[in-house]
Length: 553
Image 1 (cartoon, rainbow, N blue to C red):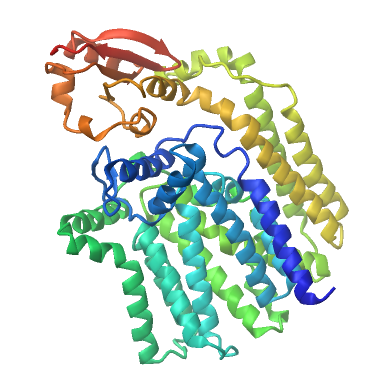
Image 2: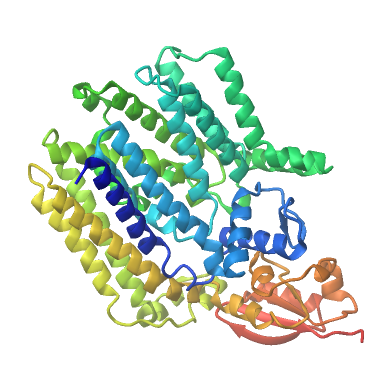
């Protein structure tokens, strides 16, 4: 078999495995508030309204995100219908492409084994795997930033003189797509990374003025495409609101999310397990002194800078959301692959602290899953210690367990312990594969069997209520908490858009209006005193449902 044929077969195998990992089951659980439903609802409203230029929520302008990912969901919904599967399939496709990208880049900067190492470590890590079965923007956003950065690294590599202008155009194009996906923060990440690299490289860079102009033109045309269309359409106010929102994210605890300064350190340590732990010894730049490949050393340096830029940037940003640091997954898994390569080649012995951390975190994750499956058996013991009425209401839900879920935890722990025991001096590729396989089985099984049950304790009662009103011509209003679920799951139509809070709570209604509240006594009391003609329909799992009947025939 020729090397080319073998390479093609490996890529086909990666694509098939990725499809089996990321596609099955993505339509089996409701979309989660806020982000998943937010983007899916914007896509649904594009289809319903026929306005594909302006992003909307509740059929009003929504300036927080550009439309590229939402356009992907629109295409998906045109093909598969307006449902969870259609909302999530773009990220599953992104997962397939990402693993192929990692294999090919890893093979180019080192060899096929390194490409497979990088691909495997990315695929078996907790949050990277989960995000490819979600319906959020970040997987595509991160991929575009990574590709833009990669092509720029290759473009500036002194040892690479082939098709450099094509690589420059590719870099600008993908960075432009990142802007079109989530906004200028994609360009900010690249610019900060590039700036730090310039400083550490004594500002030595082979970059000509005409190339800089070409880069900026492609970047501006691609990244500014939607913004230019909005200005032409007379919607300059959307651009202003978008910029103000981006600034506010950096300055305030927006989106209802704050956190402590080391929030993202903890998220990456646990969320990118096991790659995060395996990578730790390779964060010492001195280990590259024995590295003879100058291009690989440059790539390592870029990845290290990219990692720290993203981590420090979003540690400074006051808004703390789990996926803000997800761009770190690429450099972190690269560093982990580099460390594992050295473990396998005998150039470095896996330290004891790495093995201890691997086993501890595997046991904690396994224990967490085991406890979740037994939650209904001991939750009553927690009630006296919980002061949040809404949380206690959520806990009234009951999940359905099959009894074999604990096996997922055992598989994870056995796989990790096996690798740690067998890697006294040299880590074998086989034992690393065993551990990675155990991680994938654990994550995949948890998503298929655990997450749908956990959802019952959070949002399921409310979403089931919204779904029950899909065929009814009515209003649904949430007076005291923010959600997008009522729009998507009740199939809200344009004709309902002008009903404001005052009309719904006090006006003469032309159709029934349903109110959804968190079952908190203070909020219930305020609502009942303010809306005296609202009738309680039901209370379920932390939510209270009221109705005001139509008053105009």
